[in-house]
Structures are given as C-alpha cells and as structure tokens.
Image: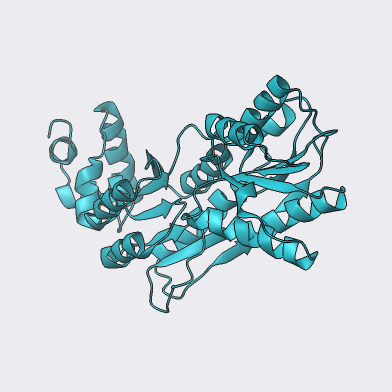
Length: 332
C-alpha cells in the first residue's frame, strides 16, 4: 500500500513492527523513534487501514444500531444518546432501519454474526422466539430496548426497558381523574409486544376502578399520523363515543388533532387527549399535548454503556428498567 507502514519503515530505517507499534500506540516504542515515525506518517498523509486493523484485532469499533422507523421523531434523542456514548469511547454507530419487519431484523443479526461490527443495539416492537434465537446463535453482544421475559443466565444480551405498562396506567389514571368515563385508545397491532404491554396498563387501571374493558375502544392507528387519523375517524363515523383518548405517540396525536379540527370536536372540552413520548410535537401544536415521557435519550445512553460493558468482557446479565413520567399540558 502506497504511503503505508512499509514506506514509513523504508524512510525511517526502522522495522515495520516498530512503525506499527508507534502508529497504533500498542507495545513499546521509544519516544525519539515514535516522534520521527509520526512525523513521517503525517508528511505522507498516512491513513490506517481500518479493515486490516479489524482483522488483526478482532475489533471493528462499529456498533450496529437498528430502529424500526428512521422518520419517527421518537428515535432522535435515542440516537443522540447512543452516539454521544459511543463517540466518547472511540466507537461509531451504523444506523439501519428495519421498518418493523422481522426478516430485516434477522438479516441484521446475521450481519452481526459475520463480525461486521462489535455489537448491536436493537429496537423492536416485538422481541419473539425468531429474533431472540438468532441473537443467541450470533454469540455477539446485544442490547434490546424492551424487556424479554425468556431471558436466562448465560444469554449474550441485556435489555434497557421503559415500563410501557406503567406509562399507560399513568395516562389512563390521569383521564379518569379528569372525569372521563369513556376512554378509547389509539395504539398499534395487538399482536406486537409494545401494544400488548400498554394494553395491560389500560385494562388493569380500568379494572382497578371497577370499569369494564371494551375491545371496540382499542383502535389500531399503526403508530403514525395517517393511521391514527383513519382509525379514529372510522370509530366516530361508526357511532363510537369517547370523552378521553390515549394515543400511541405524539406524531400519531397530530392525526387525531387534524380529524378533531375537521369534525368540530373540541380538545379538551369535548375530548381529553393524552399521548406518548413527550417529543417536540407535544409543544408545537394547539392545544399543547399532555404526554408520557418515555425517556428516549436515557434509553440510548444506557443501551450504549451496557453494550460496551459486554464488549469489554462482562458476562453476567445487566438489565436497566426506567420509569416513565406524565407531563401535563393543555390537551387534558
């Protein structure tokens, strides 16, 4: 390779091993020799071959970070938390969007197994037997951003978990306290883990107050703006009644606000509204949104820190559980 280690060795008169130690900072190299080698390397505009270094050391300094939706503002602060920790430790994040597709998640786990990177942070709406089995088979360090109840000692993954069930209980309790009698939910597919966990909080809180659960009040808004708009519009047009509404995220809540404006439904006078995530959307609308803060930045920060611990040799399980917070605003 032109201007590589051999060329620097030829110019300085030192061995390639000495030059390699000076450039990498690993192993002993006298101060005078190191200064001369680094000076020549700078003159030659020497750039290390990261692929070669990875082959020799078995360390790529890359972390694969998989999220379901690159356009969802929920992930922005999570990405910030991950990148800050990784950069401070000399690692780089490789971002990939799986579009909530199990096949794409499996593809990324296979890439991890091929040593494309040193570890993975995976966001998924549904950790299941298929993706968990692939993670176990990879043998590589992984951090999940939701809990997995089937975890056992010796597993190669940890999880960072914000309690979705508790977050939904907070939202439901708040609307009941505000006098709501008919609370509907715009969430996602009930087959998905996140949706199921939140429904547990909703149903449990209704039961606590002696209220019956009505499945017709649980709507699949697909966690997005248009999906929420369509789901709630159909609910109202079919004669559905609600004086309180819990929406899966602030972005989806924009669709609810759009429909309510068109239909002449006043918020909070006719319908009290609570959403999830506490993103900038919650402040950039009228009325401002009461929203459950799901602590996205901290998820990213802890996920990166726990993953690096694994990469550095920790074997025992370490899971972090965080508690969401309800931020009250005008919509409720």
